[in-house]
Amino acid sequence: MSTEDRPEVPQTRAEARAAREAAEREAAEAAVPSVPVAPEGEWLRLPAIVQPVSSSTASQAPLNDAHQKAQQQESPQAEPPQAEPSRADPRGSQDDPQPKGSPDRRFLYTILAVVAVLVVVVGALGAVSLFQGPRVSQVQVDTAEAIDVSGSRVILTANQSLQEIDESQVTVDPAVPFTVDAAGRSIGIRFTVPLDDATEYTVRVDGVTGVGGGPASDLSTAFTTPAAKIFLLNRSDEDDSIFRTDLGGENAVPVFTHPRINDYRSTSTRLVVAVEDEDGSRILVMDHDGENVRELTLPGDGYVSSVQVSERGGLVGYTYSDRELTEDTGRASVLVTQSLSGDDEPHIIEVGDAEASVAEWQFVPDSAAVLFIDFASTLSLDDRSGDEGAQNMGIAMRLLGISRGTYTAIVQRADGATVELNLADGSETPLAASEPDFGPATTIAPYPGGTLRHVVSRDENGLPTGQAIIRVDDDGEATSLFDVDSGNAILQACPSPSGQYVAVTVAPNLVENRYDDMLVPLPRTLQTHLIDLRSGEEMVVLTGFDASWCQMAPRF
Image 1: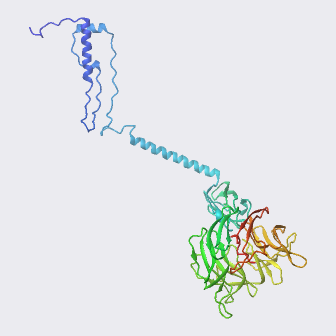
Image 2 (image 1 turned 45 degrees about the vertical axis):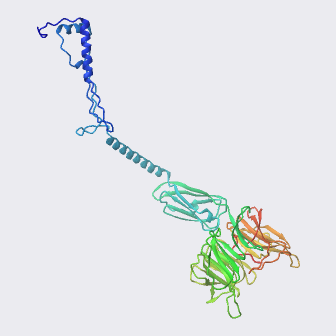
Image 3 (image 1 turned 120 degrees about the vertical axis):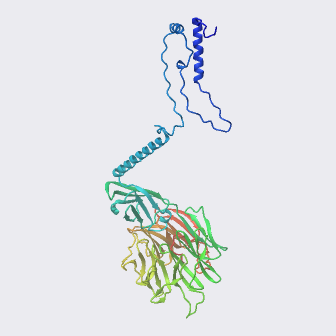
């Protein structure tokens, strides 16, 4: 009998349960896919994950009705299996549409968000500018130049074009005279006098509005000027030297030495030095540290003195005399000007088509003009920036000083009267006497706010009993600032550019103070007293003379 013909043997309940569990295990194992292993050195490319097959749907051997009925009676009715979510191929399909969270779509959303933020920011800034008014976007100022020369500027640049600015809208603290030049977005404040050193200045422009209207605003800036430094000349039995120092005198540094330094002057960036040797004089131009020395061409072989510089005109001037002089040949004390850069030939000043020999001369501050008195006592003005030549300003015996920023000279006329001469139109007014009156001045040095006057006190016989420097304010109030006893001499008083300080050169103990053998002889021992011009207090005494604040070298 074959096995197919054998009758089915009834199973017990336990046997039916075991058969059922075995069938379920076989179905579950068949539903788990095998994991492929990639060969060494190659990436494994996985196929799409196959949806798992529920054990309830796996193929099983058929059971007879009796067995099925027995199984149903043994266990409660099972819930139908829940289908698992399908898992897409992580690499995607070329035929399928782009998934909702794809990188390209996220990048597009990011760009749109950034653009939206920028639109909001620009709109907000525009609204803020409409409600805030103009603001300062840039400030330009050269603080080092501001303490050395007049005419320096601070420029405020706004973030928009501005309506017209009136000078009454501008204030400067501490107060200094200024002019205003405004156009477009820029407001330029020009200081007509040099500024004090080591001082904080605040510039404010009130009620500024844009050309398109809107609210007004106040523009302001603050800056601090640097501490001042000066140069002094010191002569010795060995080499002469020009040194630079602070106003305390503790950091003196020699910048140039030579066996015989006759004279020198300083600009904001350069030194101009006249030296002597066996063949005559030479003029050297160099940096403040004594580097990059170059020599200027002179009119011939001779000697120079009274060296001066025009910062604004870029010129050096001096009196020149030929080394070989006779009654009929040679030039004596002619006035010469030439460019500081040395790119031109020296030019001799003429009066009436003849080279003029001059007794005194000065550059007019903040210009390229020279004011001089020739040996015929004719006062002349020659603007070297033009071609008009020398203009006759009358007869004068002394040239006492020229004010900064005002184009006004103080001269002594032939009748002995001291007047203030307007060099622009030739008008003049008597120099007001001081209160109290300390007597006639031998020299007058103007500064912003007043003048320094060198006076000599005498006894009833006319003999000198002492000398003093008198400070006279613009309102005429006079104060004795510095004095020396008989036997000492004041050679020169030079205010700093802003009138903050004064350098007074003194020759002490004249009886024992022998003279040098230079072209312009001076006592060998000279001292410079630095004084605070506002308080009158003496700050320090330095060895040397011819402070760089002075327009010319001292004479004795």
